[in-house]
Amino acid sequence: MPVSDSGLTFDEMPVVPGGRESQTDCPYLDTQWVADTNGQRVTGVGVDERFDTPACVYWSYPEEPQLTVIVRHMDSVDAATAVVDWAAPVASTDPAEEPEGWSGGRFGGNGHALYAVQKGTTAVVVFSNQEQSIKPQLVAERVIDRLGLG
Image 1 (cartoon, rainbow, N blue to C red):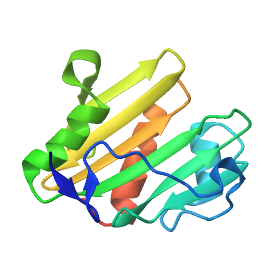
Image 2: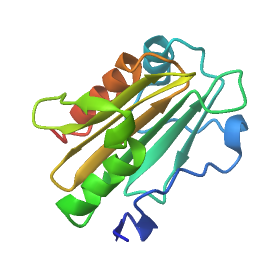
Image 3: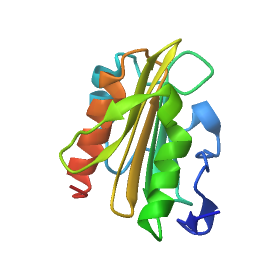
C-alpha cells in the first residue's frame, strides 16, 4: 500500500476538525472563486494539514461537502497512479487529459462529479456534489496552476 503525505494511505480522505462549521480558508483557492465555479454559496471551509499540500473542503447548505480538493505528493509514479485509480476507476469513469501532460479520469452524474489526474508523482483529486465534471476539472486546473504543479 503506497504511503506518502506524512504516512497517509493513497485513499485517505480529508478530516476537518469542526466539519461544516469550520472557517479556515484554503491557502491556494479563493472561496468566492470556488462558490462561483461550483455554483453554490460557501457556508464553511476547512483544511486538513496532514497532507503535504493541505486538503481543502467546502460546504454549502447540504450536510455533505460541496467540494473536496486533495493534492497528493507520492513517493512514486505508481503510488500517484493508485490515488487516481482509487478516485476515478477506469471501469466507471471517462478519460481526463487536462491540463496537458496530466492524465486520469472524470465522472459526472447521479448527484456528484469528480476529476482526478496525475503527472509524475503528483495527483490532484477533486470531488463535487454537482453533476457536471467540468466543475471539478476547472478546480483541478486552477489548483495545478496556482501551486505551480504543471
